[in-house]
Length: 463
Image (cartoon, rainbow, N blue to C red; front, side, top):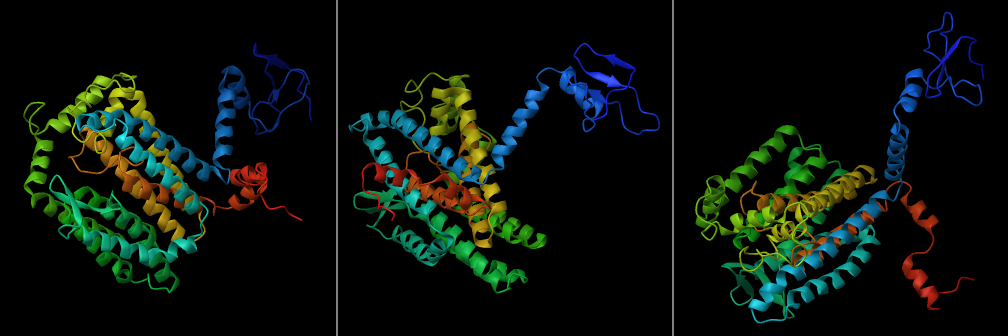
């Protein structure tokens, strides 16, 4: 390495600059005390910045570390797993906190709804584990059977004596003493069936014609939406349409066709809003809220009261006052309001950040998976879960009109919890297909299940 020139001047921070070499085009050279050598690969201003601003070098090192972590093959896998675990745990806590009051008012055990939610988690986690270790070929094999189950289930809700009605809406059927909501199955069915359909058409080279992009995907989506709307569920209908648009976006639908679909969907949503008196009242109440906190707009007003009374850190778990009958549907559609009251602004920001991180993980998986079916399915699942969370939070904070969509993994609801866990397991399965993921899993060694079996002496011995 060349040594520093004879004429030098030294800064107090210990950075030594040599004189500009004659005829050279480079900037001043930087020498580091102690070895008398020059770093020709480091411009003078970078050395000055690193030494002149204490702590900046460590910030750069931390940024580089985070980038290195994000570039690892299993980053998406562990992001989805960690976010699911945190939201599920928070959901169990909030369901117990909010539902205990309603259970006591109905003369039930204060743990009645919590036990149902815990049962859903106990069933859903093994299903998520199985889905995370399944291949896309298995998902595609279930595409049409799953769609048939969704259509039949939605049809059964229309049969008097079979469908279960609540608040004037028939959206459930009773199976084994438990209420099942087929519209939740319809979300997963549309994702898998739509992704499989478009992937098959792409393999046959049919997607060059925009009509093959829409048929039969658009009629199939329309059938599901009509069946869901028969049960008076505008929120789920909107989520189904979001999935439909996400699939069209990924497949590369021409701009004029995609714009036409947006206009058609907007007109259909507007027609469904004005065709019902109570939905029209909700829109008018959103645009021009009137009345007191116990009037017709009690839910939205009391929800804002709950959020506002939480402050920065909240009033504490279980200490909510609004859940004592002031916020209707506090265990499902408006559980975010009680969460904001008990955990405060910090709690709501953490939950919002987790859904944003889930969106990042889903888009990262969609960008890195090798096949079209996986890319379509990942985008559909991510758009469904994240947009449902956005709508739920937007309704509670008052930027969207009231719609009946639960907060994924947090709101009470057995069907929503099970289907969402299966969908997140599928995301984890697709994340295992990213470049280098299989090698990283193999290098990690046997999983926890095999380790437990080996501890118990039940694992198969390799010869």
